Image 1 (cartoon, protein in one colour):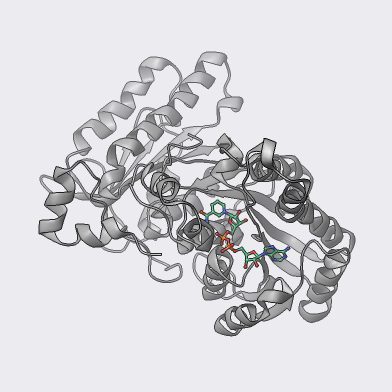
Image 2: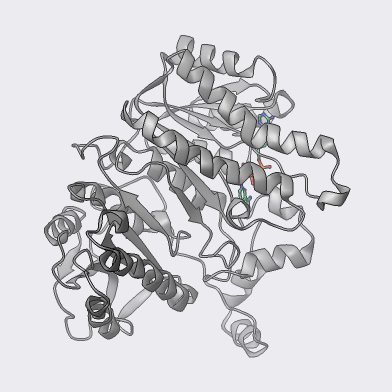
Length: 450
Ligand code: NAD
């Protein structure tokens, strides 16, 4: 679906008129238009600052240079920046937070549209005392607030919490957050640690070469976009959807050079069918994307038992049954990646969505609870929580609700299925081994669930 305000804002006269009546004038976001590049920051100007005793500076500098950026230690006259990275990992006490102000206050009027801000902090739970822990946590409030100031220009602010000894794991989120691959991910913290393995020499482009991915609900929407994105990184994608959607499913599978697997994931024998297909046809699976999902909205007083069971069954229970069978049959390969589609409705709850909210919050709990056990095999499991994404699901919403969902975020626009696919792809990569048990939103920093 296209956004009429973005279309109108392209015309200078209409843009002035829209602005005059107090409506937002969002611009098309600067999105990446292909797979990961070896040097995605080639030609980009990035300021790297130490907010005080930062411990990640050398890793950040090397990662930026390896990505092709021109790295500055201080502003260079009137040259405008494409990104600013601040290492706040050394902050111990509240006064140290001034390092954030010193690093970024002079920068705010010197950045291009669609600029990227990335702030690095140490993990609060690893702090030596409560004040140090709280100071580390304060960095998140700073970053989220910054995101809200700059989103209207297509700029984003995100952060990485780095665990002790896990500095090398910062490379992958840095490359994601500083490029157009994360255009609609804003105000989000990601944690990296060594639980599922130390950083290795994982590929930074064609990251899924030779790997097999399963994407459920792949006939359309976010699932179809995800199948395309993973295939662009070299994966063979097994595309799954209900038998009634077989024609569209085959079209997706053909487009991405993958296989079609028409199965209703709630059928009694679905987990066995899926595991057998992956084992026999592909010898195992490396990436599992649990994307199939439905809404059946009603206030609780009006909700039928059928709607309740359907939403919990498809969105949540089927995920746990499929994973249990993949484990039992030994189909999920070592170093595997599991990604569940949650929702900001699972974080904040939504009117008329007690069933959906429960199913999506369940997935947040599921990835948290499963991460430690899977880490022993180098497997990670994470959830993505989309906000308002322009798909058939949201096209079916009443106008006022649709408009509210679309505009109430830092970027005044909805996301595209490809934006969610980008976040899923980020988690799917071998280089994302430092991140597990987490839920990251792709919502343009939506006010819902904030
Ligand atoms: P969509 O309705 O366009 O696509 C969902 C796909 O899942 C369909 O192809 C459908 O046939 C398939 N599916 C449904 N039941 C199935 C079953 N029993 N077995 C196999 N396949 C089944 O939805 P979408 O907008 O692309 O959403 C994809 C996921 O993202 C869902 O889990 C949804 O809850 C989540 N999500 C979407 C949004 C949004 O704004 N669109 C926001 C938050 C979360």
